[in-house]
Length: 217
Ligand code: SF4
Ligand code: SF4
Ligand code: SF4
Image (cartoon, rainbow, N blue to C red):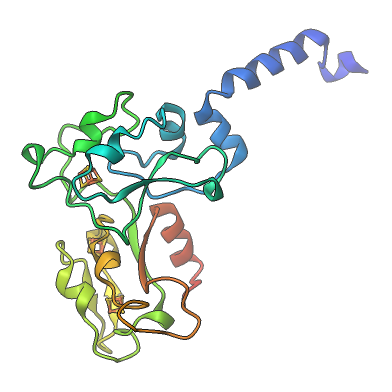
């Protein structure tokens, strides 16, 4: 019976070896299916990133915007201590005013876990995408807020025919400035049921899923 299935001691050993080889952490992330996180520029291929990142925290240390933080254990075993973006603390200007305009986090990374193409620009370096929870957004509810629209450096926020706030998906690179400045849940602003700011940056694949499934109406 074992011969029919091709399941011999030898093939079992090869299988185990294959799994162990896969347990370079990149492969493990595929097996474990950890939640994707927003990464610094150039770290958006989650499997490659998890496999290459040493958790050395050099990128955190050099970021002039101090927008990179270590992920906590709540983000999952493989994600723990990997760098993720916290846009409540700041936003990423791609080191426009530092280091000759070259992203410091990418330059300091010793393993190329963060890597960018030579022709990369802030416009084509996509950290993630902005996503609005409409029920929490003061601009969506007709309360006149336009702060994120006014402060987006890439003109990626607009209004629709009803003057409601909208993200221009293709123009957004996930810099995080909108989340940083959003007044929802700040300055005494309270929207019933809100647990976060109305606009947040999420990994592109998560925003694609939310938009495709119209989770937010
Ligand atoms: S590009 Fe610069 S500002 Fe942006 S996360 Fe990296 S070090 Fe920070
Ligand atoms: S919408 Fe937000 S994340 Fe996107 S480019 Fe504008 S400020 Fe940056
Ligand atoms: S700043 Fe926040 S509350 Fe105001 S319009 Fe933008 S997403 Fe909505």
